[in-house]
Amino acid sequence: GAVVSQHPSWVICKSGTSVKIECRSLDFQATTMFWYRQFPKQSLMLMATSNEGSKATYEQGVEKDKFLINHASLTLSTLTVTSAHPEDSSFYICSVTRFYPVGSYEQYFGPGTRLTVT
Amino acid sequence: QKEVEQDPGPLSVPEGAIVSLNCTYSNSAFQYFMWYRQYSRKGPELLMYTYSSGNKEDGRFTAQVDKSSKYISLFIRDSQPSDSATYLCAMRPGTSYDKVIFGPGTSLSVIP
Image (cartoon, rainbow over all chains, first blue to last red; front, side, top):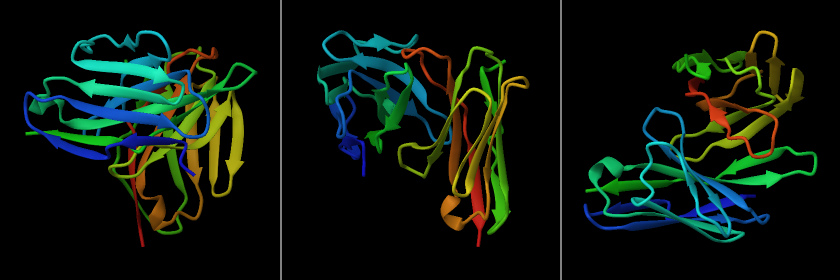
């Protein structure tokens, strides 16, 4: 079954409004979640690393005031796109990491959220 | 030079063919290698996960890693139309907190 869920799966909003996307880890507690952005026919671009109980770490070029990340619990991280513009239209995907005692981890992805800003 | 290179395709094969998908990389520190399958408008799904060099088989899928050549492959035997998707290679160094680097993905179509 699914390891990660995202809500909503598709959202349309007007320019200037804010949109919140939820990412939930269903099978295990995730101290670390990642948020990616994917444009059509392109690979995933890491936006930020979400750490439970602390501030998110943003990748270079990603505006932290525009893409607000809150990792409030070990099973939930949210991404809020503030004052959305048409260029923010994209496919947003979260992933959760499952760590193993030997020091490795596996990364599971959510089904994605398609954001369209009109 | 990008850290991970992958031919974007599209690759079109007849049903039943053997498919070979490849990635090259430049960072010799990479230790963990993954292949993800992504259907249109869906999140990536982990297919194969290997550590260091060698082969790993899972049903119709075989992953190969050649660290000396910095080259990884995914083979799909007896390809099916349901295998039509984009395949992303991914890799990372050895520590728990390293970020995964993704290839751009190869679009595969299996024609019935």
